[in-house]
Image 1 (cartoon, rainbow, N blue to C red):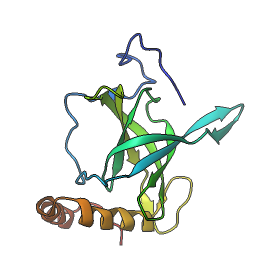
Image 2 (image 1 turned 90 degrees about the vertical axis):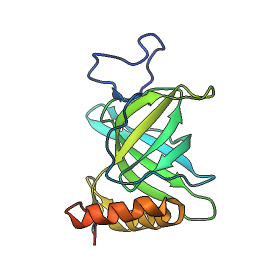
Image 3 (image 1 turned 180 degrees about the vertical axis):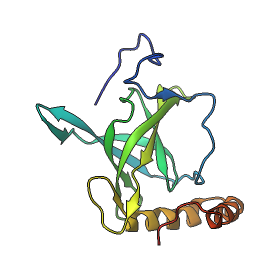
Image 4 (image 1 turned 180 degrees about the horizontal axis):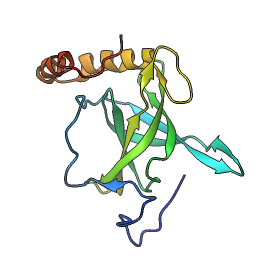
Length: 169
């Protein structure tokens, strides 16, 4: 994992640090929701000579999830656009494994952690490969959203999806 020293906290002006989005999280394509007791396992892809290998699995408190990504609490920053493998551990369910990349970070409002880290899932396809997640993972995220999400927001998203947003079959 890429750890930054605490000096220059947000790495302003650095191209290798995810964008500071503390003040504005931007518009969302999908509703964020929380799953009580869920945890994130993150493995960062690292260069080893001419190859890329996955680092050790590290575990973080999961702040929220959407069908497009997740947010977790951390005491270290991650390199911008770093490829990662994220595993969402759910109580009494099989974990969901997803490929993602680091998209943003922000200051964590609590005292236990320093940052929120935002991941964006890679696209979903019927056949998972190095650049795509399995569509079944998307379906599981959509099912979790129905259970744990806000029903009013779900209706607005369904309307937006009919206007052309991507929804796997």
